[in-house]
Image (cartoon, rainbow, N blue to C red):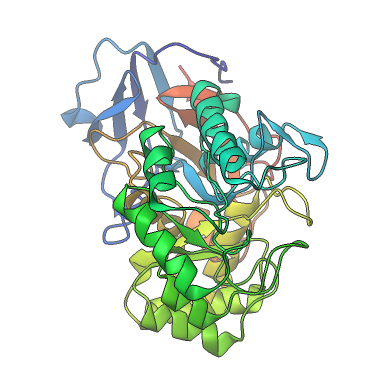
Length: 395
């Protein structure tokens, strides 16, 4: 059984006897390798055991022929502070998501903070505070990229410059505040982009009182970097409009758990038909009114694989390498120089499938046997997934 670490550097780690290695790279989703070497949280080698320098390892993990994939990235969460969500009055939701294979989360706005300030000074202060807080504190090791201000009428270019200089790199969902018109959003999104701040736009019907309906024309005019929950959060645009957004925009196509499942499949299929699968990323859009979904990203992978009939190894890339590249992260891909964030999986016990990918294609959830962040084991056998048939061991 794995010994769970809480801090420090990983030292040299050798991960051997890998049965299936998923790369996170949509152009080459499966690697012909059985060994990964990590030094102080970064991948230093990927290949065959005989070709890797495995001497002097502080930690050796025998995968016992299970699957290793990059740690999953939740592209759309609504954190507040610490590992607590006032939306559902729940503690430990980030740790629970880590037990579902998620190693990185990206805020779409800290919108559930009780009494959230909506004046310009206050919203900037909240964004900077959230960014600093999660930069200083990583619940269960999970990397939470937070501090995503919800833009409001009256903001000017200098506000975005100030935010960027303070370390804020994200905008909360455009449309959750008073800025709902396409022309207003377009100007502010452009200011944000000028200073290196990435933007996401709300798509579809209002999610909570105070948010607004954002239709396809507003999404296209605003031209945010990410079409947030293209399948609605929860209420979706008409399927034809969702497909039109996939075709007419070149931006990221974000599909979420807390959205319309029918249009989720339509969006995924549209991306394949348009030959732009690299644009698809996955999120949960939680915590939300429907609760917290610790297995939300795994469920999206299984759901899209089974119902859109896209190979599982490609859909895992939607939740890893695609998001890493679009979000400019150093994780999400298994290659030299990347962060050593991994999820170790196997088919669930008693799944009728022969292997992990086949079980996911049937719609089954995989069993998580271990989670590693920065080369440090953060969880052994998951308390949330169905039990994996086989689990890795620390030698």
